[in-house]
Image 1: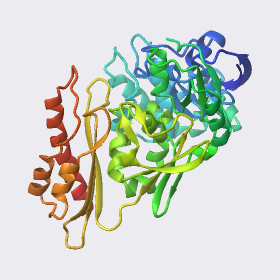
Image 2: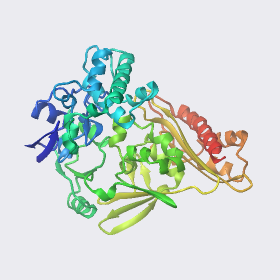
Image 3: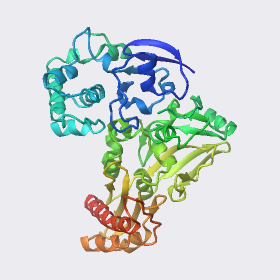
Image 4: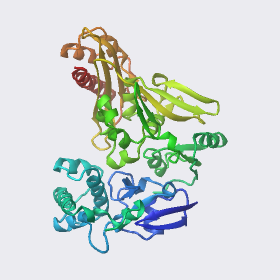
Amino acid sequence: MEITVTVNGKTSTHNVPPRMLLVHYLREVLGLTGTHVGCDTSQCGACVVLKDGISVKSCTVLAVQCDGANIVTVEGLAVNGNLHPVQEGFWEEHGLQCGFCTPGVMMAAYQILQDNPNPSEEEIRAGLEGSLCRCTGYHNIVRAVKYAAEKMKAAPAGQTPTAVAAGSGEAVP
Amino acid sequence: MFPAEFDYTAPATIDEAIRLLQQRDDAKILAGGHSLLPAMKLRLMTPAMLVDIGKIPELRGIEIDGSLRLGAMTTYRMVLDSQAACSRLPILVDSISKIGDKQVRNMGTVGGSLAHADPAADLTAVMLALDARLTARGPNGERTIAIDDFFVDMLMTALDPAELLTRIEIPLPQGRAGTAYAKFAHPASGYAVVGVAALLSLATDGTVQDCRIGVTGAGPKAQRARAAEDALRGQQPTADRLADAAQQAADGLDILGDIFASADYRANLVRVYTRRALEQAAARAG
């Protein structure tokens, strides 16, 4: 079935089988391997991406459901080669060890900050309920999200990733 | 994990969806997909065709005046974002905020949960307590189904194969009324081992005028705890009376056991969580 999807600001058309999952479309058709397959049962959150601005587990969405949709993956977060504040937070606060869950956690974190630009530690932890990390115990992840929140408050203009801006028609700062 | 092969179609209107369902008796409706797709990936379900109703705008939306009306494809996130709905019916926050996780609630839909009729779903019990009226459209037009007649058995509802659940209408409790949902969540899955939803409305003299209790997780389908409801009507909702009524909550229910919780243990959970839900509902009734 033919689908036209905008991923990280780039629109393309492909013929995919109906049973292809979004995560496999991203990884195998588009070559965007930043999005990981973890549990493959919608538990772990390694595969989280944004679909029309809302975080979803891409192992539990069909590629054909995304016909006409705007998808943002972890590759779409950086603006002009500069790390997004969420990415910078994980770097500065060492919010990862093995890094397998990190792309999904970052996309979940992005949505947390869109919904609530000034989250408490408790709200960050609650917002990350759909993401499992088996290394860090979450402390540094929470610090990373907190860092991103502070950074985005200081420079709100820089918070819109190229891809989100392209999809919503906003100008990229 | 891939699902088995299937045909896919995404109609733009309800009538087109019904026509497709009539043509193919091996089709299944795809709503939010967060029960169906995992089951298909495990090959527990192998429908030959999916009718995706995610692109039918009229199925999504929330209206509130004398009643709360939810389009069947309204997501959990949309309900939680509705201040008007959540302030009038805090039971929706109790239950929906504990379903799955943030990403699941972004996709999962109210109508999808009810039509799937998972024996451990949360909203089945909530809708029983709230006396919801469901609207379904099929080849012969529209009909209304009372929630008490909707759940038939495990994963089975009163919907005909070519019928589509389109709307859920919840009467808003009037006067002194309170709602609450309490669940013992399975520590791994988060599904209800037992979940109890309660609606209490009080007469002007403070006695219980009406009481509806929905129980999920305990048996093959969501059920009303009628013995406890009857025990409360006409009583003052004191802690003692609520506890006495809760003692009868498992009476007459169809209760199943599994490797995690025996039937006896589940019956006990029904009594304990009924008391908690009733206490919270009574506190909210003020």
